[in-house]
Image (tube, rainbow, N blue to C red; front, side, top):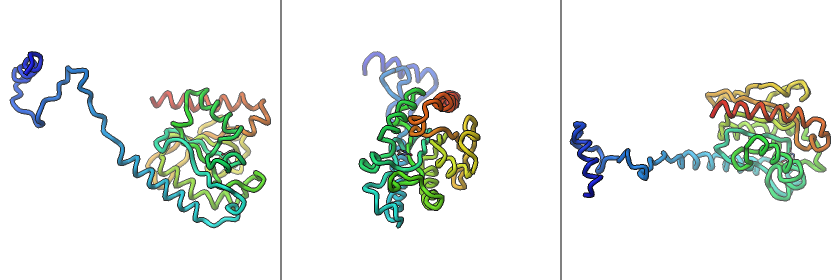
Length: 236
Ligand code: URA
């Protein structure tokens, strides 16, 4: 036994401790003796299995949208995300790659995330509709309702603290509101699920594709992003 270990054990003895529940005492003075952080691997596996189930359900759900699309587009990012970003539906690039927001709108989304110190790897990015509508047309109300249960299931699995809705279609689907985006943006709403014992703070803002066409709205979008950043900072 080296000298410092001996001193350490004597310290225990002097403190009235005669035996240890484990083979060796944890040396709290030793900075190299790292406390093992409880692994969340089981929970991660569970989430991955559950998301795979949702993906399988969407794949086997019969819809005419499937006929024109090349790839199913479900999500990108982290299953443990604190923030979930929800767009409308895949476009051409997303359909090609099978990932959401990878085209021009996606590049702008990446910049928007970076501006509030987020990386797309740490958030969960998805869409209301998971197959590309022909010619990028807006999904119909019927299609929104058909895909909504899959989106709600994803929210239940990921269980984020915040939802950021990108554009009117996502706002309509999640907030069930007929109001235009201009009327509902800039304030916090709440999303409640019967399966989750928590309120998810939700904000609706402009879609990056709209911002590319109408840059004058970037100022408002920036204000909404800052509202999210403020809440995230408060939570940390
Ligand atoms: N627009 C969307 O709404 N979603 C995407 O994934 C890409 C563009």
